[in-house]
Amino acid sequence: MEFESKCIHSGELDDQNNAHIPPIYSTSTFKFNSVDEGVKAFLGENDNYIYSRWDNPTVNATAKKIAELEAFDLKDENGNLLQLHGKMFSSGMGAISTLLFSLLKNGDKILTHGTIYGGSAELMDKILPKSGITRKNLELKDLNLVEENIKNDSSIKLLYFETPANPTIDCYDIEGLCSIAKKYNIKIVIDNTFCSPYLQQPFKYGVDFSIHSTTKYLNGHGTAIGGVVIGKDIEFMKNEFQTTFKLIGASLSPFDAWLVFNGINTLSLRMEKHSTNAFTIAEFLEKHPKVSKVNYLGLNSNPQHELAKKQMKLFGGMISFELTNGFDAGVKLMDNIKFCTLAASLGTLDTLILHPASMSHLGVDKAILEEHGITDSLIRLSVGIENVKDIIEDLDQALNSS
View 1 (cartoon, rainbow, N blue to C red):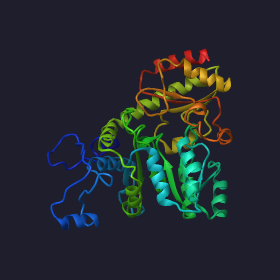
View 2 (cartoon, rainbow, N blue to C red):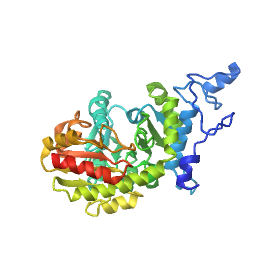
View 3 (cartoon, rainbow, N blue to C red):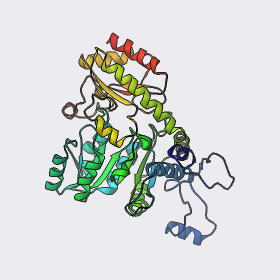
View 4 (cartoon, rainbow, N blue to C red):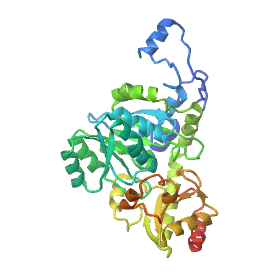
């Protein structure tokens, strides 16, 4: 099947009642026909479900669908179709924290960049250090610098990055970073939320894990909080990672999984429209006198345009831009928005706008933000699928009012 068809037909459940749409298995536990069957289930010797915190048919179907999309048309090192395994979580942060705790221990270090999502940054700065796990921020666009740091610091055990990054829309060379990490036996985790598997398939370039906040483009409608981890080490995912997953307990509800499952059906259609709208808006913003800089990988003027063309199918629906008059202009712009929605999320059908300095990244150290280009005047825009003229008209009036 082609990708668009897999969005609809992958991850289907073998339902005994032949339901057309996969049903919601809203049950906390599952019964056994005998003690022996229960013993074998707990020992992992059969495929019986036990408890929905561990596994649930609706949740697993959704994880399988996402894993199949991430693996679409890819081969493993032996030339076989790539097999991936996914686990769903109650949030993207649940997915990130569970994966990091399953991979790292006291004394380990994460190599990352300073422009990651504010929640991820706070996790690495405020929670993980209590377990002796720290992060090192680096300019990951400089591959020589990356290799030098990994080579000279044996405590670096994980390379973690977003591309495009939140909220600066920086693009990182997935293949180049994976090549270096593999050389030194470093695990690679990518947050692929901004792209979805439709726009970018990181496993093509050698990552070990891909993370999504399924709240965003995969659900697409702003109706369900969720997260997913996709991994290619099946044994690790089904054993060590599964144990961490069960004990941390950040499992997704069957209803929210069902909403994500059905949202994915229209993923390809939505991502096309998000991308075409965003490109038109980026061109508009680039010419506006109240805008000093536009971060959108689809613009020929973007220094990372060619790299993005190599590893992305389209350039996505995320834009950030800087205003000429600083923090106050950002606040005024937010207060003057009428058509777009002022909200701290992304990937929904409607256009969402936020001011990172006063919203999503408020809890991150200001010195780190400024060092990595998250300025007081930076605005993040998640472009929706409305008529692009309505979006531009609203941005124009709000910009002129600020």
